Image (cartoon, rainbow, N blue to C red; front, side, top):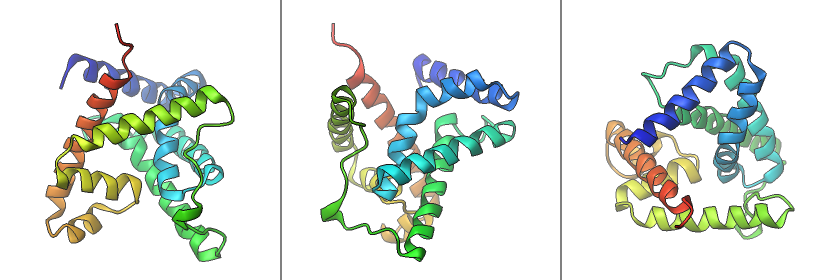
Length: 193
């Protein structure tokens, strides 16, 4: 772990702690910093910009309401928030599937959320490109675990069954993979000198 990792985690932990104290400015800062990433987590499960935006709002409400229960020694802040978002998205997907209002036909899937602004669309396109490059650097099992968990919404137990391994191994692969992806994406998004 590098000093930059510690600083990022410390900033997010501080913002979550301020949310626990009902600091609305901290919630806005938290949203600005991690909202796009969490929206992408939801979108990958729901394949709908409208639904992922709704889930993002629900997730931030849950983050706000549960900020006091966050324990940094149990999970990194981004992992904790991504889990909340993921479970919210899976709940919404289940609800939409049960009510028959949501179809996940891949051939009709929407574009990745980027808004109508050209700069936002370019940013989303660059993020997709960098994410694809970074995923390609991971080992097969780690890459497959990341794709199943974060892009397709599989649980650790389902991944373990699919990859014929145990849940602790999957947990380790996801942790290492997420850390490597984060470091890779940070490197790719740094301004070139």
